[in-house]
Amino acid sequence: MKILVIHNNYQNIGGEDLAVQNEIELLKQKFEVETLFFTNKLNNYFSDFSSFLLNKNKKSMKELKRKIEEFKPDVAYVHNTWFKGSLGVFEVLEKQKIKTVLKLHNFRYFCTRKYFAKSHYKDENFCPACGIENLNDKIFNKYFEDSFLKSFLVLRYGKKYFKILKRKNIQLLVLTNFHKEFLSTLNIEVERIKVVPNFLQINEKQNYSDDNNSNYIVYAGRISTAKGTEELINAFIEAKLKNVNLKLIGDGKNLETLKDKYNLPNIDFLGELDNDSTLKIIRNARGVITATKMYEGQPRLLCEASSMKIPAVFPKFGGMSEFYPDDYEFKFEQYNYSDLSSKLIQLNEHKNIKDISNNVFEKARSLFDEKVMVKKFCDLLSK
Image (cartoon, rainbow, N blue to C red):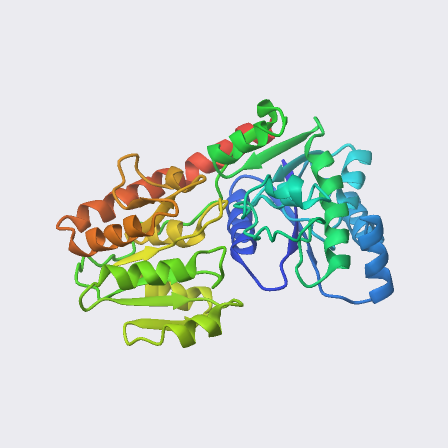
């Protein structure tokens, strides 16, 4: 069977891009795979602006038609199309009668399908799907705070994209059962939705450290309000852990402000690091931590930590718990930062951390077993 993987890379390589690459290598074990990647770099301003207005990129559509003609795929496996890939991708696939499978890595479709802020936030002060705060003066659903025009264009895209999600001829894949249930509340048939997490390579032969005396815990991700980084820092300070540092890896608009405000000897802001450097730091950590206020699709930080036998502290929210054993101890009540502090203390003082580390590893190994995942794709794509 021939599979054409279609993906629009992000301007800065992120977790979704890495997940797509991992999955391509997995699919190659059983299928003949070809790829079509797009990028959002501006080349011709007039042409690109026209594409935004029309939600169709003629150049991208032409590339797809050529790829279909040369490769003759049985299945098109689509990931991100925002924006250079464009919604024209689905038009071409439908006309060519190519079976289409679309994987949803995030909830952007939910936040961009309405023009009015009230319809987006539902009278809440924060959207957990996208992380944007609901300012009381908002009437228009201003998705990009710095631009009405960009927001208007992305909402036009989102409204049409959501209609595409409702097409009965498109198979939808999501990362968690939580996301499947979320889609069902939007009147999308559950029969069309399958849960397939992003593949993560588990190195069975890797030598794992059983050292319980690591002197730091790690947060890796965006330094932003939506990710709860300031609440995380305050909870760490409140926990008063002896001889334990907090290392924060990542960039974001709140980075410099937090660096100045929390200039403490036991808090290290390491800035943006490449994936290999980040994994080296996580491999020797006591644990990883997130206080995200967002649903998250598949928390890459947590899953990669589990694959290295590193436990995590995270909120009971969205689908994150699905990647951990049912009786996992270090989940805290969302928005209860005293509970987060207590979980950090518990992590630091736990006498059987080795057993917990082994349990999270076994859960990761069962979720991302290569043979099981390949079979899942075989069953899914052969129907």
